[in-house]
Image 1 (cartoon, rainbow, N blue to C red):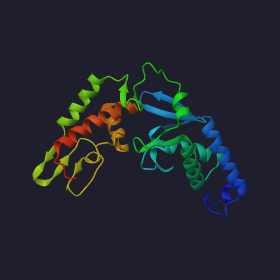
Image 2: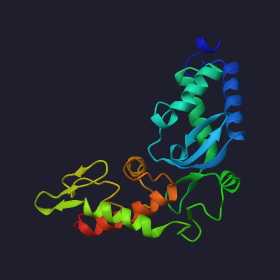
Image 3: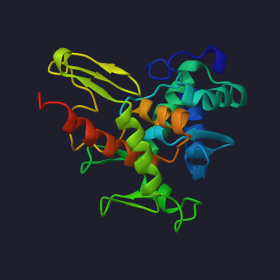
Image 4: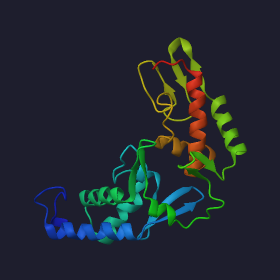
Length: 229
């Protein structure tokens, strides 16, 4: 039975149980829909919601991450999965929902999910990966947000220290330490905590709007500090 099972990645894991997990994964995939809410973009499936960033994050979120609490609880209560089994299901499910885009060196949601999303395309803020431009965003408002971030940013040349209004709040020894904000000017997607900070600080949860802010703010940072690398 499920509560007697061990790690699904183990060769000794019962094949019957593995087939059960595969059915759950296929159910999650087939029921997945992209939705837009006030606090951001989500994928809804089987009665649960998962932030879209959880799928495409380069950090490789585990089932224990706060973004996945709802999904983990759902898998435990509805399908009686253990933590190890829930982690297995999440990893396999996530891989079926993303594709690698070498143009931006990161993963994106599968095109069928994007094309089938139930959103108002004419009004929804988005980033067009074909033209590499933003569409349907309020640049006047977002530029004001960028200005707030700039005003609250301080670079102290003597200590090579950067004080930030967002996590990690302070970067020391910039010549020795690389961070998403201070390296690789071609990286266009924000790191995870930047999304969280924009939601907490300004109430902005749309992925494209956060990406716009991040790109403008990062450009400012790179112009503010010396070219260490």
